[in-house]
Length: 110
Length: 115
Image (cartoon, rainbow over all chains, first blue to last red; front, side, top):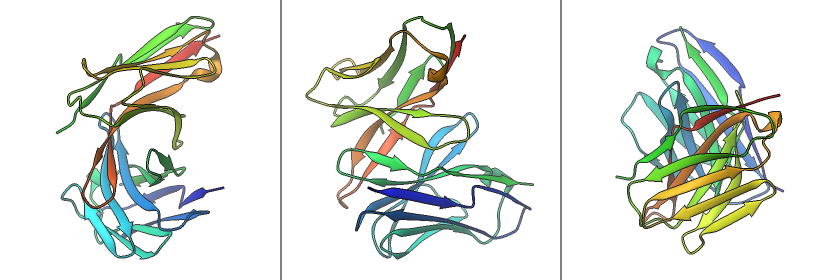
């Protein structure tokens, strides 16, 4: 069966510090992968998606970036965090019909 | 651009009550609609997926309906239990030419079932 992992589970970072969140999927090959952010009162927002290694599509302009160095690894990064980057970050992979979500990372930027 | 709205934003009911959560979407040309559950601080769990050709989908005490023409879906929960307390989100996909699709989510309905 397929499993999706995210780490860290929680993170507290100062403004201006770098960020690296990692997502890995097991039990499937060549998955479509997604990064979402869930901020208070704003719902779930798609940030990036990837249909293959090195292929990244960005949905919103921001100071975040994503990379897919391996088939089942998806990384969300920032060089300098902003207060507005605080939120709950969710990684997901998809079949043709549905998406399966990881446990999420709670990021607090102070 | 697809927009998804969920009403109410929050709902509190006594245990045992039947309840309905509402979801509306602006673009009726959808392939399917999905309902998710999210427990506090957790990821999303898929509950029901309704294809555009279907009108209803059932799983246990959950029943989801879809009316594409009116841009609406409802999630019916029968005989609610405290364990049903969570946020319920609906989502519709938009397919891209890159072989992927994106889900547009509503902001969710936070359900509290009081023992």
